[in-house]
Length: 288
Image (cartoon, rainbow, N blue to C red; front, top):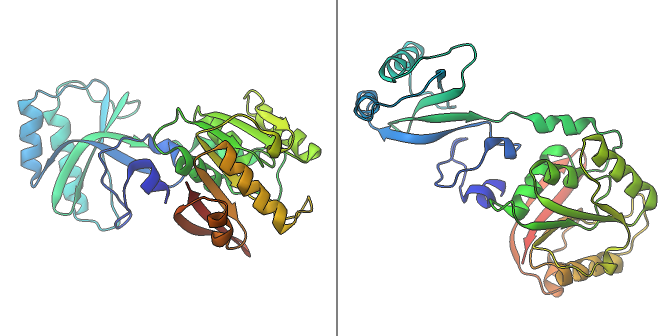
């Protein structure tokens, strides 16, 4: 679901082709990528293009991107790196490169271009000072933000039931304009402390989402289910109804199937999936 929203792509054998560029560090599930410059049926043709274009990089390093289905043997991989390195104008730097270049062979074709790797710096958010056992994992929270805004980080996002701020922190780390509300005073204060712990300005309001007047491009709601604050089914429906008033697009997370309830509020379910955490199963809906 995240890949579909980010790059309009569908995973195939743990890789995907797309015409849309996304920094791999945005996603918890993208490990590495090559921005394709040349693609051909033979390595020799790739080398010809490099020489013809007089491709120049300084302080570069070439690496081989290995796929699960390995189409090239070890010695041939090393040979490809050596040949490409020799064909490029400029000086290589094996220890402190300023730019990484990547080569691989997939579906019978050689691919070469600039290589980028997920820096996984977002893992630091797992060490926030306040956490609850039922909170979304960092991976899921980050994926939800990507599902919500896609490749447009200029969208205005709101999390009106933000809990300890797990989703909010991921959005802030991507530079997204995000606002948040939390009804429970103690939890709201913990969310503020979590956000400030990572050096971000507070965006959490202790208040009722039903009092929100402003409209947003998209909302993410991990709907409360009564673990810390008692809530009825009618109140859950009211949350979805209010979401309908403040946004055109909703990414809803629920512990039960709420398909019919969502439709009754006027939303259309565009996509859905499920994620599990321990014994808990969460339903994720994209609604418009």
